[in-house]
Image 1 (spheres, rainbow, N blue to C red):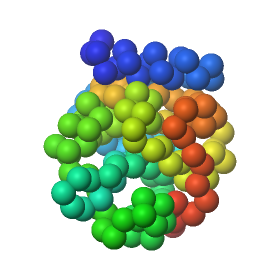
Image 2 (cartoon, rainbow, N blue to C red):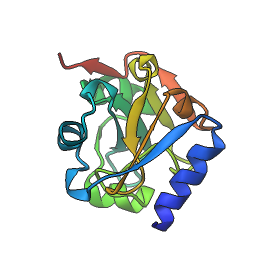
Image 3 (tube, rainbow, N blue to C red):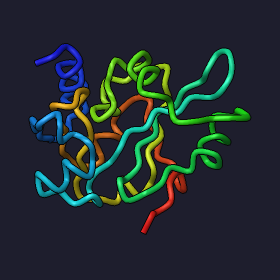
Image 4 (cartoon, rainbow, N blue to C red):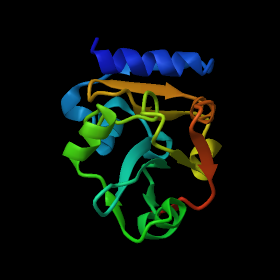
Length: 163
């Protein structure tokens, strides 16, 4: 088990919410492939997306949205960050800031300096699947586990359904 995976498991365990740590094939870690191969509904899959403001000293936020939603980057996220321009953080910057690679980014174990915003629709699911810190691990449990994180905030309208 990698250092980042152990950190993620320690953080999710500390929430006190029961969960399952599920190993997965790293080549199948992306949401659509994972759901299809392992039999999960995209409605129960939540993606953690790192957003960065443009400019010399970027400001970051981590946003958790259902796979069936589209993050409102230029509306809700930009306004909450109180910056002029934002974008999805590229893979290299995401890895630098979080220590995690795309396909494994999770709300658990993020630096405390990064606010964690959870779309309210995520909290309505019975269970969710999120990354486990690497492409080889997923975390499955009640969305309450996210709300237990110190830097977490549930946000109405952070994302819009794509269907």
